[in-house]
Amino acid sequence: MDRYGSYIALGGALLLNAAANLLVKVGMRSIHAAGGLFRDGLLGAAGLVLGQPALILGVVCFAANLACYMYALQRLHVSMAYPIMVSAGFAIIVIVAGLYLHERLNFLQWAGVVLILTGVWLVASQAGRQLPATS
Image 1 (tube, rainbow, N blue to C red):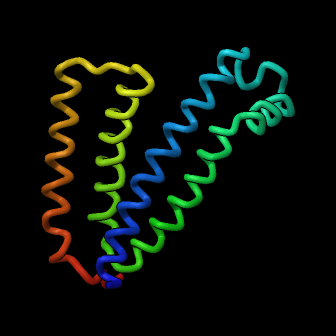
Image 2: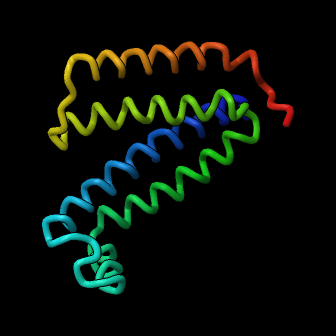
């Protein structure tokens, strides 16, 4: 189960990281609409951040992401885990940002997303052969 637990933790870290980035974007949209992060100086910025539930939840997701990722790295090679985290996270963010934040990509950018996902699949397909991590 520990072997599969590392993969589950990596998947959790991936989803938490993507959620954190999206939540920070949502929170920063509101702050931007209110005049920007530092419009009232550093203390004003702290107040703005603390007044945005999306930002606070984003920070919580980043912390939970780190805990899951650390657990996953106990048994997985970083040379396998990190490309999956970054690449698959990028693809998730692009798709969700398009659906919910109305950010759009052109055809070549979507082709790039497909190439990234193909690369993630190639890296992940060999992951089982790399367990356990020796250092």
